[in-house]
Length: 202
Image 1 (cartoon, rainbow, N blue to C red):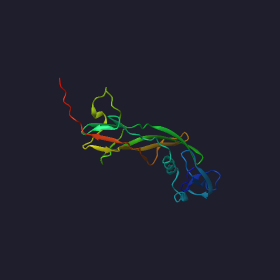
Image 2: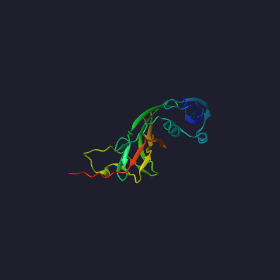
Image 3: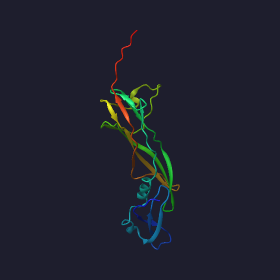
Image 4: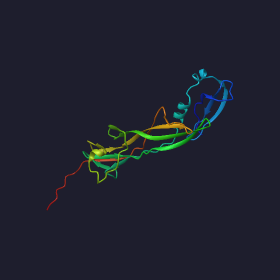
């Protein structure tokens, strides 16, 4: 269980003379947190000990293991041509995660929100989808995420994915997590070469 800065909140608790107790959470992992009950507090003192549950959920979301966004490039085999529409895509699908925070079950619905494609030549582009591989039944190049390299050489493109989430406590209503998480995927080698004209005889 990884260490982190303790977070103290003022939580409702019927046995407290004020109806609230201070709760300090320690050592978040993607699954659980340790916590201890402190002295009674009041709603006014809760303002002094924020962040509250939404901030705890964001902190836990930031520690959830997210899928590694590997880059797919076409043409394949790590080589493309100067001036060719090179196609980029990755895999990033929504998923759910159940956590235990302050002894309560919290569900997260996690999904990709945006993608930043680092082409490796100093340029980038941002999209709201993961792209797709070339399909002979969909020949319109405008239906793909592409980039045209202008110079020969070797580059190391990658994709950066920003994830967002909703959460609910128990069977409560879904509400957005107040923050996102961005992960940089691994880079890959790509050679850009000049096309050579070939004269075919008949």
